[in-house]
Length: 83
Image 1 (cartoon, helix red, strand yellow):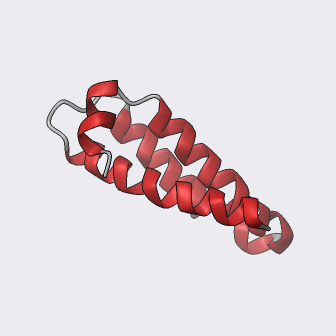
Image 2 (cartoon, helix red, strand yellow):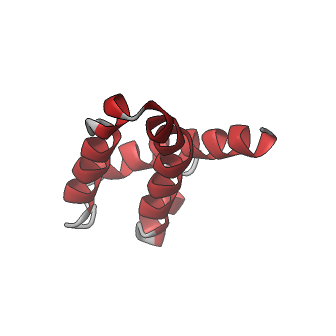
Image 3 (spheres, helix red, strand yellow):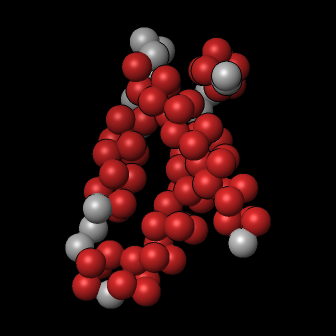
């Protein structure tokens, strides 16, 4: 259970960094479509039709996908956006 809380704490930092990177003037070209795909993935209808898979998806896979996306940001943006 503690790992799940650590994952969400890391997800909160990653979300802030992603928000900063989306507003950065030197953001990569692929970032906006990738962030849009992540939002669509978070709101997909499968979450509502199969509740157990939706819980696993929202609490485990979504923060991991967010962390993976932030990991591929350029080092300059990650350094400027770290809080």
